[in-house]
Image (tube, rainbow, N blue to C red; front, top):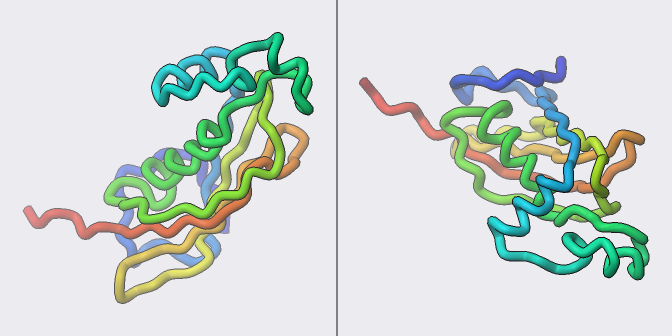
Amino acid sequence: MPVHTSFVVERPYEEIEIGESASISKMISEADIVNFAGIIGDFNPIHVNPEYAKSTMFGERIAHGMLTASFISTLVGCCLPGINALYLSQEVKFVRPVKIGDTITAYAEVVEKIDAKRRLVLKTVITNQRNETVVDGKAVVMIMKPDSK
């Protein structure tokens, strides 16, 4: 199946196939990290204090793991399956740090369909510009039936 990178308006559950995938990419900026810290209130110095971060095993500031993982939500809500998706669960394993200036690519692939509940199981992976996995996981989403008009 081809990788889809465009945003989807609405797709019926019945049209989505096992093997279908989507991806999005984003360069992580200092502003992304600062804004995310402000939104969620996580001002751990590993994320926001360059002097402190120099003394850590990473040697510099790193992005919040959940900032990186949140791009899977973008895939679910806007790409695969898109509108009418209900994000039910996400398993996530943080494999490598994401640093300011890294370009991440979030990828999701349909690996299972559960017809009775209109659910999709997605393999989810986020890589950096060196194609190294930074986040690995699995999502379960449900496609809600559109309202009758």
